[in-house]
Structures are given as structure tokens and as C-alpha cells.
Image (cartoon, rainbow, N blue to C red; front, side, top):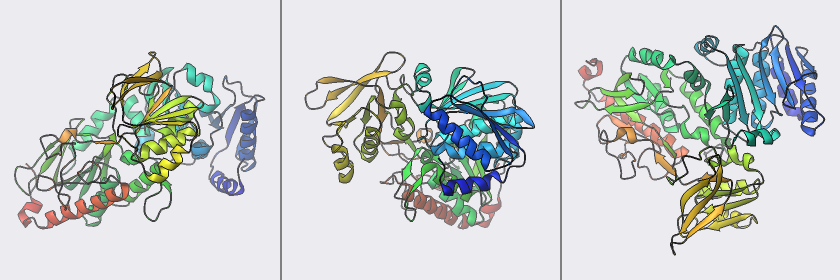
Length: 528
């Protein structure tokens, strides 16, 4: 099951265990149980601090728990075999149970210990989901840190009947005390913020005490990270406000056009960006949403950014890098059936539709790539494109048309998502040439129709294009002196990671140029 290289690496990790841990499995006679037994026996053979038993009595088969021998009440349970993207999660669970310290701030660990109640989590993941590991690892850490937190992490492919009974049609899906609690990627900080209702007010109080910044970056994607690194290297007092560090990159699977790196994945790149930013004296305020920009009253004055929690920050210059989000179809039924058949990540949710019929909305590169990927999993794919022809690269179109279980429909407008109240059952589309309405019966819809800039909060503050993009000049400066912008939220014509990085650097250098040209008295004066 584990090749030589993986076994050697796992042996090195298990050498870091500080305390004995126990694995207790509940197995049957099925192939997955045999696979689980082989995996657990292999792990136990690599360290004298790991013991394994096969006398578990859990209702889910196969499943196994991981617990510290000295504190068995603090444990986590995996149902299914956590390989694929979740093998790292398994390794971390072993390390944390064995006393190896997690790479999180002490304040986060203390917040976990101080949670006021008892919590029972069940979380569904797929082995191909790149968003799931963060959620798996967050719940694992909580369960191994606080005995009052229980976490069962379930591989959906191994428990298809359970997945269907509970209406899980998108992963990661988290249930708390038997009820759906969260769907989609969520970090440990976000989990704690939802459970600890006082966290937001404490964060607001802390932010309110911060001194003004010379540069305040709004957004933690590639553009924001590049801007923060460039200004910090100049010795400029820099702050970053981010709803989610990494931005939309966190939702991107394969990246093959990042120059000098033949292949990487979004979460890995986002982690690398965050680690790079942390190399410098940058004040990162994560899980914070900007709601209003109040421009300085005069050039060289202090701009103010008001956050959703009520706190505000002041800065001499501001760099807006709020990125973009997936565009919705905005048709009846779409919102109602999100996570009930309407999905936006084919890599994450595709395996949940194995053997079923799905549609992909959008004929650009993203849509065609999604259709190609899904065709290898589902029974049939219907690709629906608004324009008269597909817009994807020719090589992708050729691959798509070679697949026997794909139907391509062009000059089509999706008009409604149909469902039975619990899940998607089909959609309707209008032939743009004839006006005739058609119906397609299916179980899933993957929306891939481009991006919408995250700029609604800036209306009336800076000049926006008709599409809502921040208008910038060649220096990245907006219509407000001292306020710059970079990345997918701007009028830059091509929305690419490598372009966003360069644009972030441009905005940072422009902000630095603005700061050094301020009169000396402007540089040292404090805001009123």
C-alpha cells in the first residue's frame, strides 16, 4: 500500500512521537477493511510507540480511532481509508496524538481548550478534494486537544449510502450534533470563530489598539502577498487585512502555468505565500472583512478602512487586492440547491456524482477542463455554453469532443435549476436562436462561468469599471491619490496568478514611491 519512499518518510515522522499512541480499528470482511488493516499494521510496524488493535465496535466499518495512551478521551476517528489528499492529515493526527506540537499559535490552542461546551462533529470528505484536508486537520486538532470535542472524519466514497441519506452533495461537509453546520473550506480559526461567539469582539478590541500603518494591504491572495512582501522589505510598517489568506488560490486545484514551477496546487501555493509573508514583520489580520474605505481628506493624509467587526484601521497608503469570486448564474433554483447538486469545484465534488448525470455551465478553459475531468467519473456530462462556440483552447476542445459521454450545447442560456426540494433533478435552457425552452434531467450542475470582483464595498469610494473592477493606471494607482490596487479585482485584462503577483509588486513599489516623496512633517504626523 505504501511505496518505499512514503514508508521511509513516514518512519522519519513517527520518530518524532513523544508519547505512545493507540490505534483501535473496527473492521469487516470487505476490501476496504482489508486495506485499512494493512495500513494500520504497517504504521504500527514503523514505531514502537504505536500499538494497534482490531477489536473496535464502532457502527461504521471500516473505521479506526487514534488516541494518546495517557489520555484516551482525547481521540479522533477516521471512517474509511484516509489516503490521497488525506494521507497528510493522517500523519498529522498520529504526530499530534503522540505529543508532537502542532504548528499553530498558542492562542489558538488555548482557545480550543477554553471552548465552553461539548461538541460532536461528523465531517465528510473525498480523497480528491483539495479543500478537505484543512477541515479534516482543524477538527482533528480540536479533538486531540480538547476531550469535550469529538470528531469523526468520513470518506464519502466508502459510505455512499450514508452520504445519500444525509443529502451530502458537496464536500467538505461538516455536521455538528447531527445537523449540517458548515459546507466548504473552513480553517481552524473560522471553526473557532463560529463556536466562540466572543472571538469577534475580542479581535475588534485588539485591532482598535493598533498604530497606523504606512501601507495597509486589503486582501491576502497572490497580489496582496506580493505587495506585503515588497513593502516589508523596504522597512515600511505594513499590515494585511484578509478574509481568508490565500484567496481564490485556495480553491484552485492544478496549477501548471506558474513560471519555473511545472506543477503545484492552490493550497500549497497559498501556504507558500503565507509562509513567505511571515518571514517579514507584517501584521496579518486574518478572518477580517473590510466594509468601507474612507479616503484621506488631502493628499498625504490618513486613509481609514472600517472592518465588519466595527474596528477601523488607518494608513498613509492602501493597496486594494480583494480578488474575485466565482460568478453565479443568478437563475431560479441556483441558490436553493447550492451544495444540493449545484457545485463550483469539480475536483472536490465530482466523486460524489459517480455514475450520475451532470451539467457543466461554461465553455471557457475552466468549463471544458471540468467537463473532461468529470467525464471520467460520471455517467454523462452536458456542457452548456452561452456563446455560439466554445472559448476554450483548441487542444482542450479536441479532447472534450473525443469523449463518448459528453454532449456540447452552444448558443444556450440556462434559465432555471430544477429540484425536488432536497436535491437537483435537472435544469432548463433556452435556445438563443429559436427561443425554444429545453429540459435536461440530471443530478448535478457545475458552474464555471468566470469571476466577479470583490469590490461592492468600494462603490462610491474609488472609480470602478462597468464590470465593477477597480480602475487603475500603469502604476496601479486608483482614482484616489495614495490608494493603489492589484490583481483580479482591477481592470487588468488577464486574471492570472503570475500577473497578480507582478501587479502586487507594482502597487507596492508605487506606494513606497509615494511615501518617500511626502514632506518630512507628513511622514511623522499622527492621525487625529
